[in-house]
Length: 425
Ligand code: GLU
Image 1 (cartoon, rainbow, N blue to C red):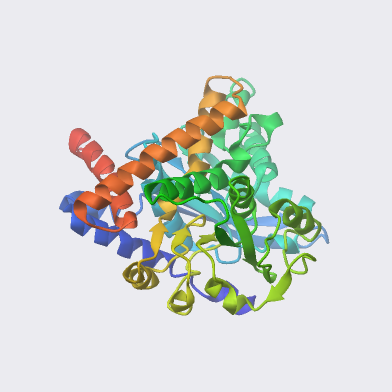
Image 2 (image 1 turned 45 degrees about the vertical axis):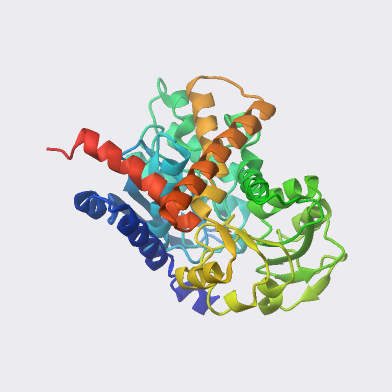
């Protein structure tokens, strides 16, 4: 874990290479390129928390606000040892493209705490979350910057953030602040369906790919890296379509069953072991390094960034990679895979269901309403399908890959805003 902690993720270099490539094809205005090539603000906080044993520990927290030309900053907070300023920058930048591509009135932000949450008790995590929120102060807010769940953060953590943020406001305005975060539990202003929104959206994009290629997903095989919120829900909806999950990998190891792994059974099993899939009785263990080489039709990376690199790209047999995670494919590996004819549904499109769900939660809170899950899923499917088709159309007309096409749609929207409004003063 020590070396893992210190190893840089390389995501920042990746996002900048993707950006520069798309900006070149688009011929993005030089000034706007400079604006979008840097982040608006970067908040770094060091905050003390008393642990259960009475000792004090100081934690490092981050919130990077990349760009807010289209609206308040929006994006998750992750609790993970790999969180550092560069990771937060990269992830914030991806959020700007993601929200712009989906046509949401948001900019991009991201942050988190450098921590392995499995090493702390629930009470410690609550104090860490509350003290981090307090340290961020008014840098976040319902119309300023709206965090959400990401790796290792969940509705409970969002409820603590909302409560802490609201508790620091005057009694008269306290309850107007709950939508400072999205992804909250249902009793605290959460949206029905937000829990499954990212995984559902991943499957919407896979269905669109299948439709485009006249492919029947029933009986198709797929593998999933990471069995957290995104990996589980994506598998749940793939199962509904009759597709077969044959391998899963996470930090605990990799498991394989050519006859299929039932996502619901795996979820029930993993819940007993802090989310770990290793040891699942209805599958056999496989070497983690063989995971991406599994003979299957679709790969859903739903864990961390830079997982598909030149170390494993050559063993990939799947014809589609649907990026449930942010930044799972390194740009060099991507070029190699595209050359081989592998299609990649880019993260900023593929996993945009999460932030789109967040947008509906935010609207629900602003309007003091309670939305129904069927309506939420319907709206989500619609919005993601529109974005998917726009990406395909743009990629086709510029003869470029889907990621570059997705960036071009996002960048053009932001460019238009800057051109209309100008740069103050
Ligand atoms: N963390 C998710 C993402 O990377 C969701 C962000 C949000 O809902 O604001 O897209």
